[in-house]
Length: 167
Image (cartoon, rainbow, N blue to C red; front, side, top):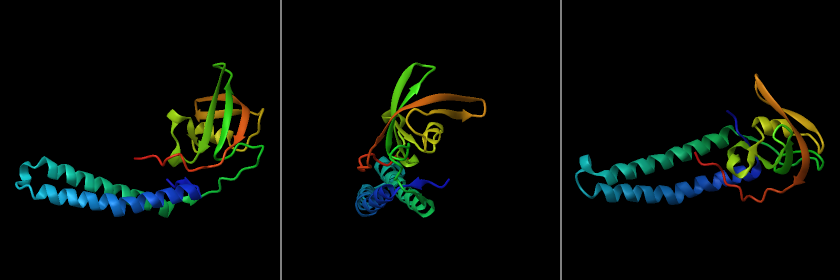
């Protein structure tokens, strides 16, 4: 799947790749060397753990580099009166008689536990481009959907404080 990333996301990913190549890789190689020097590799747990950590780091680097190669860079600008990327939106769920506040972010930064929802999620897709007071239908799957009313839109800037989701 092609990820949609903002310029800030791309910068964060590049910084993580650089950190992993220059710092984590060096430490992992050193840990493997130290564990190997302890002798018999057939019963050396430290050696296998160090190799596993080194391989996990290399795998993460490959994953991030592939993400950058295939990503579509999108703008985080939106009209002031419409829901867009990096906006904080308060919605009213009539069925539950509850209000919730969410910030719309790219899929790599989505974190439902922190109310950061992806613009690729059903709720994120439904909210994009709508205005305060609009009632939108959120299609979860072919058999289920629900309505929410947009109560408030706050134009927030991306200060870069949301971290890239780790896989």
